[in-house]
Image 1 (tube, helix red, strand yellow):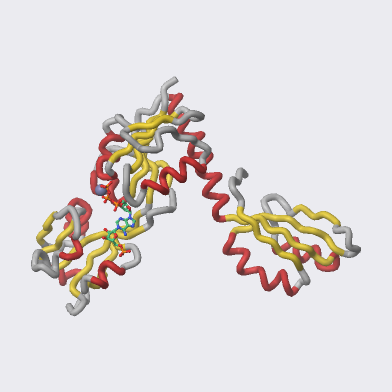
Image 2 (cartoon, protein in one colour):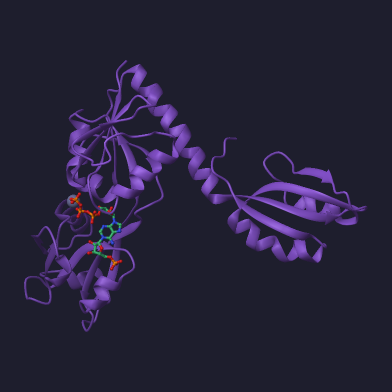
Length: 285
Ligand code: PRT
Ligand code: ZN
């Protein structure tokens, strides 16, 4: 049987989360030391450990079948791959930043300026679309120090909390794209590999769904049972069981976490007691 070969980052911001995701999807992986390649003992996949920049190229060359990588790298590399699923981690944005004391009112500020970046393709395309003529100075690391040492007037780089910009005396003036970790694949998967990928995606979606939902249990006075059920509808409908104490029922349901904080006061006003909120490991609907 042809295995599905998955490329993930060898060491960096995506590595732990990528392995965690595959683990939560039920894959047990041998070779904890992460050499170049490891196998799963219970799922037909091989894991290839690479630098994140190489992942789109390995996938488009079909050396790996799918990869887990940031969208920023996928767009910069311009490889022929398809985006299969957004994974919701390693969220960040690619932004233009300038020295904090500069006055900034529009993109025209960048005309005639020099911008340091590790993302020349994304930046070049953006500037062209906006009719801005600026010099692009490609550097591969520590982009944020470029204005301070006189290498460039501005930078175009990844921003997450924004603290790196602040500590280098810069301010973010334009966000050009948002990014998160995604699964990419090439276009020539065999039927067998497509089935393996579909199975993997199904499992990952069950994990993602479970993370945003909670199992809720509460004791409800029978007089308000109907009203309580209306505000916690559950996957189909809540489970309701009588308590040993006369006039009370136990209600079990599934809610999104945000929903829970919105309705907690209503539940209390309706006399609900002993409210427990429990994490869900997998959720299949
Ligand atoms: O060695 P290899 O080439 O595999 O890794 P790498 O060093 O190129 O990448 P790595 O591990 O740093 O990041 C991998 C991916 O994580 C990136 O391509 C993004 O998709 C994503 N990601 C999410 C980030 C950040 N958040 C992030 N904050 N990548 C980098 N940063 C850096 C950024 O470059 C800047 O220096 O963190 C700094 C900004 O952070 P804040 O929080 O101070 O704004
Ligand atoms: Zn990299």
